[in-house]
Length: 602
Image (cartoon, rainbow, N blue to C red):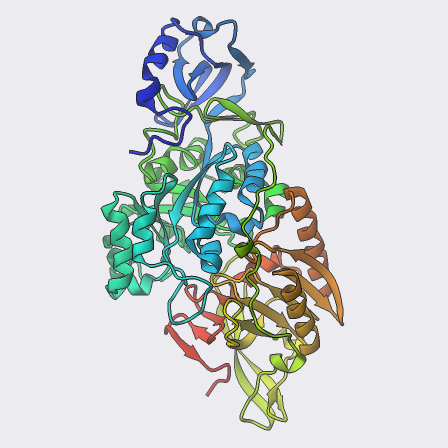
């Protein structure tokens, strides 16, 4: 049982809680006149008082009973004035690195939105710099009130032998991490094919987690919800965020697996999935909410779990069910319901106040009995974290780029050539394969802006191996070049464009600044977000990162792209575990057949 995510363990303070509940000792904090959302009973209870001591709930006054007997001379009293009081919101699956903020800045961004805890899979930074970098991230996070539970990355790299990352995490590393203070389980097991094949190395990672009594989270994007899904869950998978249809959601829940309904910056799945819960025909206790990947601009403009709750209700999910999904369901999924997910005696005093069950307009966030954010502003400050030098020196390509590095050659000297094209789609990270006819000239395949076909190259950037994979992509409609080191999951150097000169300038720009995201058009850098921490994170304050992202969005639109959070969608073009086509540093990869293929069709 994890009891270390509160100011005091229950066995250390239950005597005090007993005394406070009976009025024999004063509470530290009392919230009065709240409309309590009781997540255990799915109801709203009017005019409730809540007394807090030692960072935990001591007393909940129901049925006209008040907490006046808990108020002493030193007690802080907050009048909720009829606002709803709910448990702190929990994101059941997220990669903090996708915000491009350091953990402490991420906490400053999400606590004002009511988030008190996140289930964090740090496989982004682990793919660049290993578990040592994860420990540094955890140390930064621990300086804030946000409860940052780690699910140790299971796939570093995502699929061994098909891409090259900066580090490797094996079953021994995972077993050692299970004793970390902040570990709650295993991160998404993306190598679902390895699970279905009964691969010994993959199952060793799963079993190291199961032996520790912790949860194994999943990543199963395959359409087979019969034998395949049964086998995957039978391996020990507890939760999965890769449902594509309402039937997928129900199938997971019927098999006892938590369905994590996802709404990120690029992965906008919730509207399509909400029907599974909104219909009211199945018990929603095995449904949670997840953001997966949410960049700093989305967090600032829309919000975090509060934004997902607003959308869930707009999609027809009962507001109280949605709150359960974001609180007690998520806590129960990770066997933390004895600590969080409800406002009840003995539980961690994590709660939020808001005025509407449609707007979820959070005005106060309390974590462990202390006000963490109020009226949209965090109530804490941290000094800039002193990152070790090894996380700031991860751009190791071993060369400067020239235009010829981006040529895609063919055996055809001249004439038309049929090619495979990765078809990116707005609002989803799934891709399709389309076919296009490109012209060959002197043994080189030429892109065609009229058909919205760009080159897509991925260069290994961790070990200066010189490896490059190449293919073609559509869906972005840009003239110029885009480059980023945010390229799931190995986070190599990804460059897309319609001309080699701009692609070379974009690549060299990121090499010189240590990684990031850049937009180039006709020899001019239009926008740049430098991410010197592992090529993934900025050391800047969240508002400065948001401004840089806004400039990137403007540049993308100027170049012709109208896709929202386009760089987030682009980042998934190199992830070899999401159907159908991807490019890794080793080549064009067909996820369905799990094999490399030529950009040219036979």
